Image 1 (cartoon, rainbow, N blue to C red):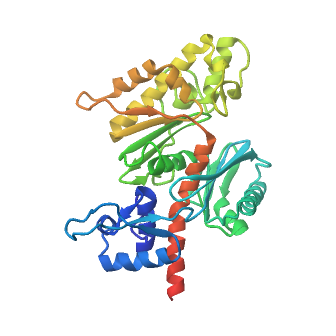
Image 2 (cartoon, rainbow, N blue to C red):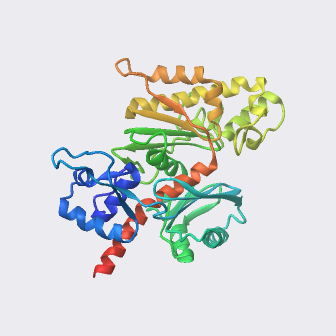
Image 3 (cartoon, rainbow, N blue to C red):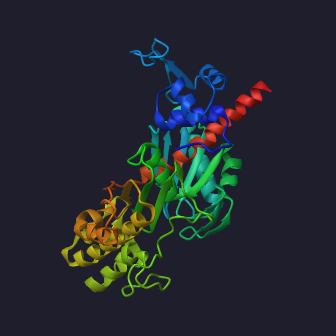
Length: 391
């Protein structure tokens, strides 16, 4: 993952080391397009402030110089970044360092769905974490199922009932910390590209199955948001001309076929009683009821739908890797044959079979994705601080 062109040298160095780990000065200069003097000026204050460490090499690595090359790396706990994932009922939090190591992980019920209550709860949680750990938080990333504008404002979050809510600005005012807000699938994709299965993979695609259905894409080192922040909003993608309808009346769409509400609706018909989405998909994955043999046809159709989606992604983007995750990833694992067959039907004869992996699910990982969002704003804040101190 790369910094944007507007980022300064220090910010770009920090981002490169966060994404790639220990690197020599030569590697950094070549990769970032910086001259040796510019790199030295950027690195010196970062070392002096304890954000970077310079390690002695164990063997010669620079043949031209005839001597070993030192490596730069981020100092342990160079920053502590708080990630928050909101669901309809719960708040999941994880604090990471810029290399993605988890420092703290907590969860608690959402005290209120009102924006005021959510801001108050997150501000209180951040203070408790700082008091209990002695760490000073460096930034906040917030993720939720929502359309987000400019990394600060919720255009619409259906499960919370929010519209045009400047939650990022309000959190910054309440905590004094830089705050970035993003759609939860996009945040999860961002973290997978930085620290997970998608590290070093480009293009990379992520499909999540659960209460909703979403897709994240990394192309050219950037997590794609789209012109209106709606890239990957594939819940109502039509997959079949006939079949069940979603709550908005769309027949045969992805949400109707494979999201938890759609699975529950179809399970209700099979079992002859009302089945709630929570009875099919729990906080840690598919429930025992979902694996009832009577519902095998429902899950197989959902796995086929997931395969159709992935097949479309592969045909359009040609990703190096597709990862499937989310609360309902078990339906693909339980009915992989139906999934693979649907993917294969969409594959062009000249293209190789795509590489597809399933990933175990936890909301803690989604919170980690939110925390990863805060890495780049942190690097910019560091750079701004350096400029201010030298002014």
